[in-house]
Image 1 (cartoon, rainbow, N blue to C red):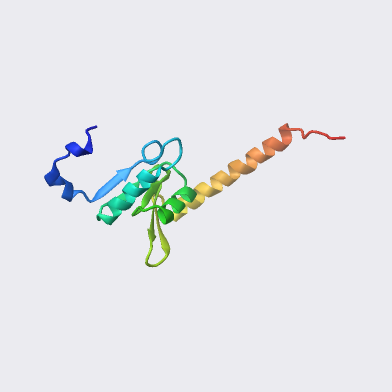
Image 2: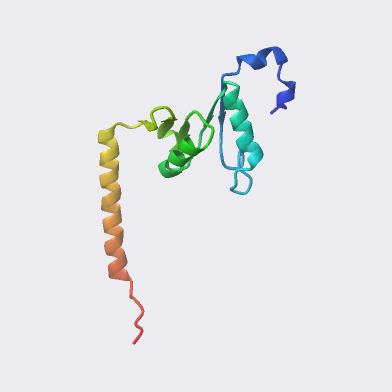
Amino acid sequence: MKLFKKFPKKLKPTIGFVLTDIDDTLTIKGRLPSVAFAAMENLHKAGIQVIPITGRPAGWCDHIARMWPVDGIVGENGAFYFRYDDAKKKMIRRYFKPEKERKQDREKLEKIKQDKAGDFEKNSRLPCFC
């Protein structure tokens, strides 16, 4: 990768988007430094859309879309896209899978959860504090 300062000056005004990972790209040891936050704010103010791409789950992405100076976020490795509409105070959510498939996935996960809970109950003993 080359330093951005070596990017041709005449092409810099054509940049419309910055797509970036979060973990160990924007963050350092799990924390977002103020310089990274400020850089995203400056890009946003300059009319460049900032869109993090991450493996993080929906709860994290909802927070990031609402609280960070970003124009949207792709989460769970491409499973969805969230964008917070500041004017309407509303989250826009778009998913890779249609609702029917997501419902089937939730049902499968619930079955696994129930099966594993049953296995745990059969195979574990609680300590007795008699």
